[in-house]
Image 1 (tube, one colour):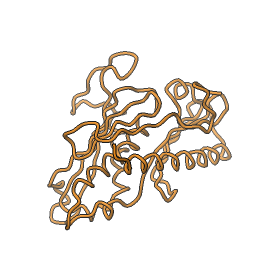
Image 2 (cartoon, rainbow, N blue to C red):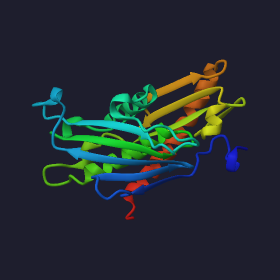
Image 3 (tube, rainbow, N blue to C red):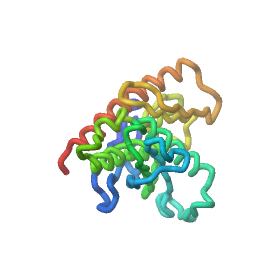
Length: 239
């Protein structure tokens, strides 16, 4: 048994609160247990220079951790002084969200999804991707009219989850304590069809076998199916 009596194949309690901030076109608070991330999606009627004249939109992301999102205060990062970790995570979020959208259906629109971690207990990147996708959908819905369909713009639901080997046991959705002590640490991003968008994996201590990788892949797939159902319920609710 894990903290709070979780089984190895059990997700933390996941909650997605829509319209958490009133100004953005799409906004959610996503909670994976004690990890909490505000995801805001902003639409602008322009595109990067390399897409000018191509009638194709763009999706990108920014990620940050607030100074007291962890046990000790961290310094607030300036845009031009971001850590390697921050840049790697926001690029991952951007790639994952772009894969979920038909960019040629966006017209000359750019969408930036800001993911701000207000409380961290492991899995901040996977929570950001999961919540960021819902914020993105909400933003696209705000554009629905006779000339634009958010349904056509979304290619596939996309979710993400962490997992790893802790004390020799394959476990889903690691919290900070588990992640810090994991022998293997993995992050999976998958779509509704069960196809992989990205896999990140490291043997922090020792190595892992192909059989263990197969177990982690199967467990991640089941976990993301459940996460996508939570995304759908959130988007279909009338909160």
